[in-house]
Length: 120
Image: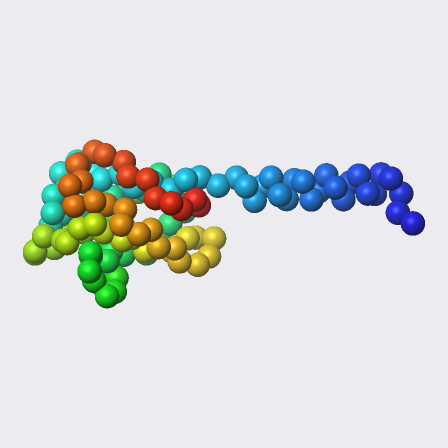
């Protein structure tokens, strides 16, 4: 039979694992200054993402890959204006891909931060 201290230790460890699992950050993207329909600059509020791609409104796939900048920004230049709202797909450095649907609206404003329904 397990001693009380062993049971208590097991309960504390489970509680700690549960608490660590709940420590996530709601993901947001800020549209950078200078962004316009064919030039998009995004800055996520977390540094744990990579491989950022965009799907236009009505698009079938994520056909635009953003370029990572040195300051945690992601940039895309297109010849034609993008069709908004945009969906964003990205890799999480801890594993797997996530998709944030319709994050950047058609009437976006540079300098504005847009919330997603995801937490990282």
